[in-house]
Structures are given as C-alpha cells and as structure tokens.
Length: 202
Image 1 (cartoon, rainbow, N blue to C red):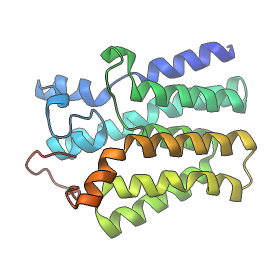
Image 2 (image 1 turned 90 degrees about the vertical axis):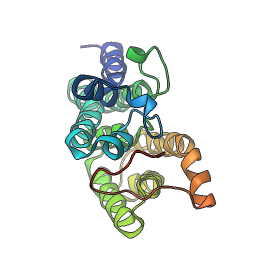
Image 3 (image 1 turned 180 degrees about the vertical axis):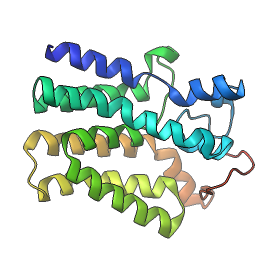
Image 4 (image 1 turned 60 degrees about the vertical axis):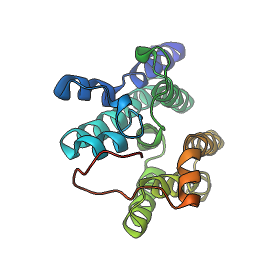
C-alpha cells in the first residue's frame, strides 16, 4: 500500500458527511437548513438529539482514525499523520457534498490523534470534558482542547512531525470557530444541553 493511496483514502473517508447522510436517511431533512447549518455532530445533536448525535460523533472520529491508523501500521508514522490531515480536510470540504462547507474538524482531529498520538488524544479529551462541564459551551471545550495539542505533543515527547501537525490542527479548528468566538464575545453563544431542545443557531 503506497503513501499516496493511503492519503487519498483518508480524504475520501473524511469526505463522508455522516451528519448530512444520517439526518437525510432517518429524518428526511437537510441538516444544513437547521440550526447553525453545520453538518457536524454538535448541530446534529442540538437539532435531533443524541439518537443521531452520538452516531455522528462516532463516525466522524472513525473516518479519520481508520486511515491514520492504516497509514501508521502499513506505511509510516508520517503517512498516518498526512492521511489523518487529509481526512480532516475532507471533513471540512467534503467531496460528496461538492466541496461545500462541512464540519469544524474537532471530532475528526480527535480520531487522528487517537491513531498517531494516543496519549495526546486522551489528555486533550480530558481537557475537553473539564471545559465543557465548567462552561457547557461545546465551542469553548473544543477550542481549549485543540489549542492544548502542540504543548501536549511536545511535553509527552512525540516527534516533530506530530508537534507540527498539532499546530496545524489547532490553527484549523480555531479558524473554523471564529463565528463561535464572535458569539462568545457578544454573549449570544448557546450552551449545550444533553437533551434535544428547540432548534437554534450553534
């Protein structure tokens, strides 16, 4: 299995818009017309509850975890990182939605780190949980966890390629959350609820 083939497979798997597909399949609606219009798990959970939200989270993690792990095991650690990055790009601009806006890469970034730097993934997941429980803002938890990635990778002794990728992932997630940052400053960001509520902007 070649480096290029694994990276291409990563992009194709990352392009699978599970939030869009599952809502279409089970609710016969376009999730892009609901709430924030995002196809990611947060908007799906907020609009349709955990019955669809949980599967979307799992599938969005797996679609980057699988190619990254295959890259690590079959080719090289660097191949796993690049394949995971390709999956994240596919999640952001999915081929199967004609490169329209996709998700914000948080779950897909998590999948990559569980494959290429599992200790970083575990600690960052803990940081996400702490910030979420303290604030009930998914955006705050996501930003805090991803911004911690480069420092965690360096502190835990991972190679330069992982540290560099951590910086890329943190920057990408931060840029995609700029709308959330504006709403946080304005005091209009929605706090998450574990049960389905009325549909509103994410």
